[in-house]
Amino acid sequence: MKTNNILISQSLNRDSNTPYIKLSKNKNVNIDFRSFIEVKGASSIEVRKQKIKFSDFTVLLFISKKSIDHYFRLAESMRFKVPISMKYICQTKSIAYYLQKYIVFRKRKIHIGNKSFKDILPYIKKHYKEKFLLPSSDILKPEIPDILNKQNIFWKRVILYKTASSNLSDLNLKHVYYDILVFFNPAEIKSLFDNFPNFDQNNIKIATFGKNTLNAAYKAGLKIDIQVPTPEFPSMVMALEKFIKK
Image (cartoon, rainbow, N blue to C red; front, side):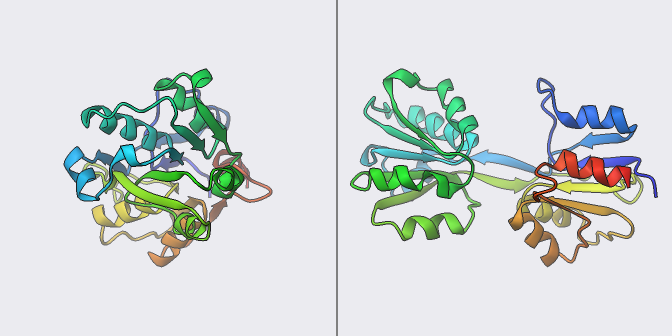
């Protein structure tokens, strides 16, 4: 069966040179982008209810770009001036480079991991006497607190934003047929069934990125046709291209 229409459950950044556009042109398939989730920032009152004072911490653990945005947004609203002495540990290079939106690198102590959370453990162990703050959303991979709890450190998590299901009432999956639905996190799977409780997969193929998304899809009763990443297909675009060729 030929693949004609693909739905990516994330919004398209018009300024980015996304490889999905190239895939669409090269394989003559229609690819739509629609965010299944939306982010709602926490207020300063909600932060205080968590009994968190930004001034108590000396190291920030950043695992996403959104956590950076919301940390500095709330720091400003709470009139907390982030000191030059603050240390930063970023999970990836892209997260660290994004940090330049708010601070000057040459005046700060910044450590950068490679890919996974475990990659930044050496830097955490190096500063074990410090107090660590982990800004995050309400959804956090369970292995992250498990890893931190095994270290002999003082750390706290603060929820600075929450993920909610988008209103997809205008997206009628019964009449707008997609050959493949692509998901990147468990919240998008939840949004699918929040919006379409009686969703019937039928012949629709499901593609998932990451172990947690895969598990959420299985628990929801979906049949998974494309799993990423794998040694053969480290990216979703590569996996989709191979699937379309088949």
